[in-house]
Length: 167
Image 1 (cartoon, one colour):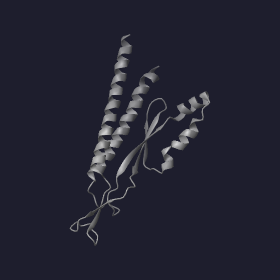
Image 2 (image 1 turned 60 degrees about the vertical axis):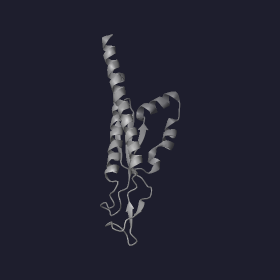
Image 3 (image 1 turned 135 degrees about the vertical axis):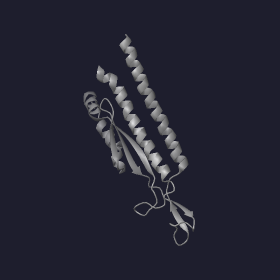
Image 4 (image 1 turned 180 degrees about the vertical axis):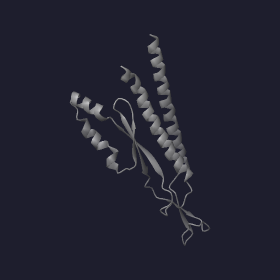
């Protein structure tokens, strides 16, 4: 029974860690929105957090018991087929694992005419990072709201535990 009580908190903590990773990625993007030269000589390339939910052994056991072919559906929708890198696992409760992959955005760099810039080419054009501050702020607000929702879920679970102990 205690596993069931704490699985809600474990799942929410998984979401909290994932949203924190997303906010870190957004903060890094905003901090480098004007970085025209990185260590490899190119402008900063925007990063994005990609979430994946893997149900793991529990889903496999359930699918065997229920007779469903869930593994095939998971294989088709698994982000590993998208060629993303930089995954970090975030363990949730009840066999649920959330993975947050940090991948580079492949969109083109912005081209700005600024002949006085030290990184300008012969025609005076500078390659700028592919970071849009408005998009980043929307992502930050979304991650912040999801973080708040997970905090609320943890608080609700704690309140339910306290009420159950009073019975």
